[in-house]
Length: 146
Image 1 (spheres, rainbow, N blue to C red):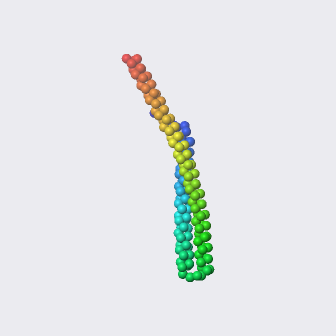
Image 2 (cartoon, rainbow, N blue to C red):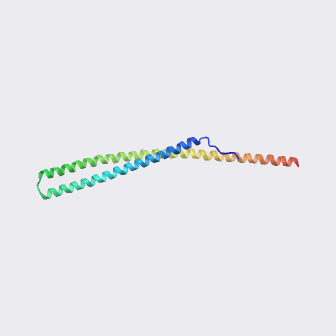
Image 3 (cartoon, one colour):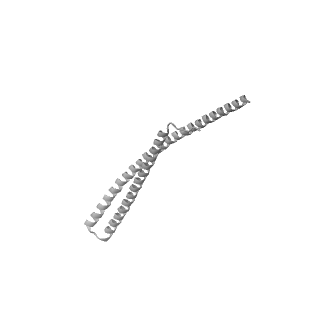
């Protein structure tokens, strides 16, 4: 029996590798996003702690230097939180871009898999026709000999 050979198998293999690479990039982008979100949460907690410390300092004594230090700490942490929020937004964009690349890679792989399936179906039909032809020749030969 003849063996099925898909002429575009090399391209299909390449598309599968590209899809795997896109999956890895998507996973890494998601991981970076998660890390950025965790960092933002950590900074917000630090900011809340600094605000609490400022309230306590205001309620206890009138140490102007300590109050100024606490106010500066709160302002700096607000700036850090704002910057980290921008990082989170960028990471979200990166994840979306990676998702789109992954979807495109999956579509391309599926397209070539469909082509392979159709080529295999055509191959099976051709093999069936060839078998029928051989059977008909054999029957004709036997019928003619009798």
